Amino acid sequence: MTHENFKTAEFARATRQASIELARLSTEWKNRALFKMAEYLLKDEDKIIAENAKDLKQAEKNGLSPAMIDRLVLNHERLEKMAHAVQEIAALPDPVGKVNSVWKRPNGIEVSLVHIPLGVVMMIYESRPNVTSDAAALCLKSGNAVILRGGSEAFHSNQAIGAALHKALQEEKIPSEAISVVPTTDRKIMEELLTQDELIDLIIPRGGEGLIRFVAKNSRIPVIKHYKGVCHMYVDADADEEVAMNLLIDGKLSRPGVCNALETMLVHQDVAETFLPQAGEYLREKGVELRGCERTRKIVPYANDATEEDYEAEFLSLILTVKVVSDLDEAVSHIHRYGSDHTEVIVTNNLANTQRFIKEINSSVVMVNASSRFSDGGELGLGAEIGISTTKLHAYGPMGLEALTTKKFVIMGSGQTRHNLHLNQ
Image 1 (cartoon, rainbow, N blue to C red):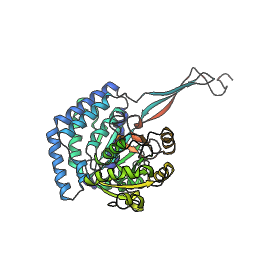
Image 2: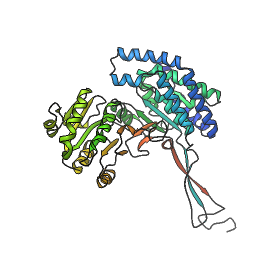
Image 3: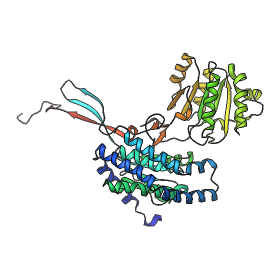
Image 4: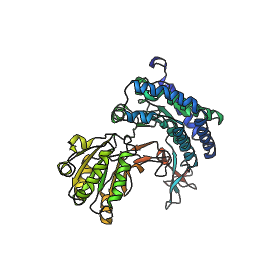
């Protein structure tokens, strides 16, 4: 489909109308649809994998990086995980209608804050086709209609997943526009959708820094931003070195191409001489390139020189920057200078340093003796996440169901008026 024969405003308006109908659905109704969505992801497995194969063939032809191709792959195991994620969302409490707080005023009126859907959410994302089902399920459960605009590299996969989800909506008599998959990769259409501020309430981009900056620059609609994940692990003087080693291995090697992977390790000078040789040798054997400061290179001479740009980089690959620091103050200063407000880890058995790290590091997720890879909505009990926000308005960190709602004031009275004016006066 080309730009000329796609009616952007009509497409967005149909999604807006679906959001009105969706907001009326009961929790039970939404959950039935979600369980059927999970069923159809597995029933249509052969079709989805066949369409995914088209995307993979094109990705290899276009020379996509191994990390990007890994995000793109769909197989039986990943489809099962996608279906399970949808089922998990169905099992979560419905945030719509949740009363946040209630208080009574001296004049007798009762004020409460009640969660309501945002309305229409637009997802703009690259490579990962599982985002299609995750975002659709999260938005449906939270009463929001969603516009899904995936990247060209996953076009066939996303269309096939969308078709499976629409079968579930049809069975439950929910408008198909509640999950609107953009049927084209035309960039002009995405640009036009970014101007539909009267019909779309929130934009959530997921992908590379370039995509997110483009969306933020061109959108007239509020944007949840997450430019990159420069995640640090600080190994304190009072760290358990075995724990630190395990967290390093998991944080860097389990999936180097994801945003919660470690990119920089800071090591206290008191443990650097014992910890760095062991850690460095293990990482080198696993193919990790170390880039370190001068003090690091004296301890592990095979490390390359780390530049200013290296400390700012999200590598998403087998590269790790390392810096030996004199104390916690220097570690915190480094994170403030180079961090991206995503996830920071401290490894320590020192309670005072733990408390200082938690207080002084204001990234969206702060870990104490735990892997950076837990910075994920599912791992934190939110169900599948719709994204991660590294800006503080209106959500911060992994975004689950409640982050897809806002709150309205509900006032219960018994005839109170603000001024003593009445008809008989």
